[in-house]
Length: 508
Image (cartoon, rainbow, N blue to C red):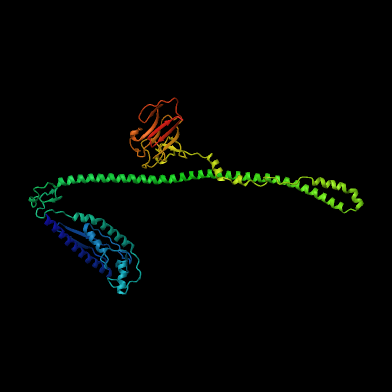
């Protein structure tokens, strides 16, 4: 059988060579037919093979050949079609399938780059085949021929691996090609049971079919593992895409809330600034009125004293008899005004700058503390179950009617409707209060950072949870023991002494 197969392959080579030779001969006949302007006659191409005799008819139709377009109409099949197309689509310069073919006025076609190189070397613009001078220096691309050549090249590249696989034959033993082979598990290869029997007596051998079946099952198992691994990677990739989209939403939401908080602070500072500037202006106006009042009194005194001074000066200008008759009145009025107390500056006439600027930032901060509050526990939205909705300040949570579209990141609680605080404790004493109100069911307490957030987990210290639970009107601790209370709890104080390992719950 092997020898027959080799003969068939050799005959195939002969068949291909004969076909190529006859095809080239047909090509030359067609070219001469064009030059003589005779209509092409029906030609016959015979392909002889060792296996069968195939007769292929090529039917040419009479047509007019345009300078830049070649039209063929023939019926071929199988290998003959391939050989005919190889000859028709072959460049006579590079002997390869056309790449960007151009057609000269003589109807011969070549690769555009091949023709340019030929012309550069020949230093003329003649056809490489018929030596006829081209009427165009830059021939245009023959689009029809290019599409046909590209299609043929693509078909050849797609069929090549399949042809190689079909031609590939595995022969274990040339002497015994028909004998059923065995597979040696020790040497991991197929062996001939006739030639190599003595070499594998101590080895474990099985029929090749059985070995192939077992190995394929193992490979299928490996394939299943690879597929499972790929699915896991795809799931992680999907989660990363969800995380990326959720990050964009977080960015917009957090940015909006930060701006809102700072707008509140800016509004408070602006109002505080205006209030303090108004107080400054009010003090300035009040003290300005006081100074104006004092200055008016002083001006009146100055005017009265000026009149008295003028009267005394006039009295001093009089002669002896007239002076003696009037000086007493002038003297009495002068002495009366001189006895008035001297004017004094009003204390505190200047603005109290220290009152307005002293510890200004601290006093504003003290007032600002009345507007803001500190929460010892801030909830982490990245740990919240998709059914839980957090407030904007991340200090309260409620159970929603619909599930949110949230990524399944490692920190998120997916199996239970829980949410954790954003910061943990590793030492010291800590205390905070939780307002539970009239909610029917809740769990309040602490958890380990390593607690399982995806699978089954019980609210008990064995799972790393220390809590107080209210369910169906009953209060229990993490050990499942009932906790007796005097009244329904509205607020719970949680106290942690980390160093002593104690967690306590109180009704404040």
